[in-house]
Length: 332
Image 1 (cartoon, rainbow, N blue to C red):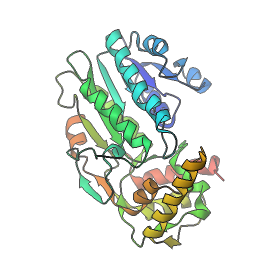
Image 2: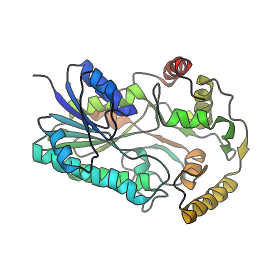
Image 3: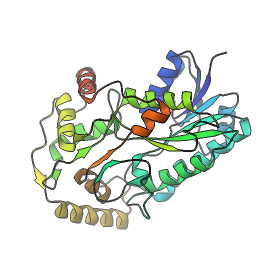
């Protein structure tokens, strides 16, 4: 009997990559997502269209499956806290409840390194890095609450693990790469430094989830723990940004702005957007300023040891694949 898997958000960038790898190894796959994804049905995936706060639909989706990959989330750096809380915290709690009710033995949760993001440089830190006391935006705050709920839920009946992939990119990326290419002419270096950051190519991120699923069990060393997932090769931030721009046929970022000025502008924009209740994201936020001006790369020794994870596609190889894909799917 083949493995039966549920992927929440199976039509998204990471979700679909996980779905395709599950199918390739003979698994029976079901997806639950808010959108309609005919391309998944064409691959033979059973699709359920529903919000994760719809407990009845989520329970139906969890029936008869052996493993849940909980990938779906509301991402972004702007917007009402309640929207993020509803999707990321309440949605995760409902998935956990349904998993227990249906007797699903294991759940892999897609978290984010932003749950432990502190202003300032993060260089080679491991999973002992604590959660901060406060967050600059709703996404990491709610992802942290959801991650804690997942890890606390670990038991001898439902084994859980959380993965923290950092800056996923590659062909079919609908978030990071488009943001960089669409804002190419307006991008500015923040401060006078070019500090190293981690990222992870999409194939490696998806494979990490399957590695975790294969190792996860009630008595496994990874049960109830969180793991950083990266390519294991930090790059200077603006080198990576310019390489992605080059892959899309765009010129490099050469202009810069002092960090203090950027923070002042971001603060003013946030205050203005908040006061006027503008829903769209400001051109700059304090969270983004800190992200673009600090080092953030991580030690993935624990993922290698406990999950058997090993990055297969290097950044250089990934950039070549991205360039080939963008040639056929240009982003203006």
